[in-house]
Length: 197
Image (cartoon, rainbow, N blue to C red; front, side):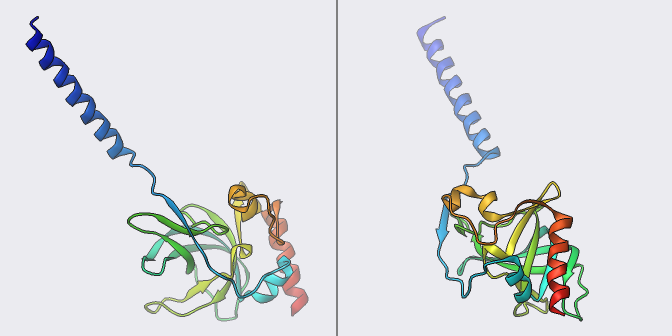
């Protein structure tokens, strides 16, 4: 085999390898950088009882989709399937609600609050919510910060400081919950609700 033929084979191999890298990167694009945005919450909560007294609606829900992403003022409207209602106003009968979370995935980055990372489809939460403005005729709900969102994993409830310990740098939420069975957690909230009646 001549040097020219060897050179051609090497060039072909290099092109094939480069094309393979492009193909693999196309299947697994690099993750977007995470950018932490700042916000200030208008009040803190020191216990789940405080949260229960404050919230208009308390549910166990599953994130089923994204209704809208607002990129200019990073926020996301999530569709939440209501799995269980713990506290509600008399008129409430929805099976799906829209919940606003500060932060959004934009074209160039994932912009989120350090202590309140973006929700994802398929995740389940206990949410302490307050009624907000309507968007296109759909009732919208907000939650007043990370202490009002608890993740449900394998039938147990965890506060966000335990789900995202690196984001919290060892600090604990005053409303910390560590692996309490969901039924026990919801019953304690229901007890607070009954006491307030």
